[in-house]
Length: 199
Image (cartoon, rainbow, N blue to C red):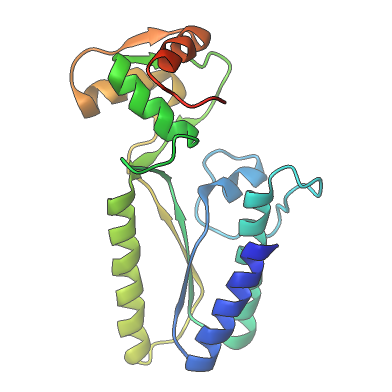
């Protein structure tokens, strides 16, 4: 796993210098538990499938597990960040959530997901990045003040968890105006005429 290799390399650098390590993971690791609203905590008891069906999530899980072990054995100050879904103008068109948001705004209509449970939790990338930087700078100060190093985990949420069937109302709150609802197939067809990427 290349991602795990880079995590190990950066961990060795942090250990050799005695500096805190901040790792940006993914909110997708919590889904391995089967709980759509798992509170911050270790997911070591919920390993990913060995089929290789989701390599990205598996590599994040492996890195989190590795860092937990390093923090326990060495006392290295490790903070793992799990951001909510990130949105922004520069997001790639292959990013499904960003595409849904972008084209819903263009069409003033959201797709319906009749058999999907859960919620949307999304925030602009700049806001989440600023919070991660703030936490990193705070941990440097704590280290300088010789506080006890502990592994920690931070979930970065927008503070608004929107049930899937309430996305229409959330889009109206965020962008103003009235948003309609379209069956998913119709929404995709209309979005394709506006340039949504092929999926």
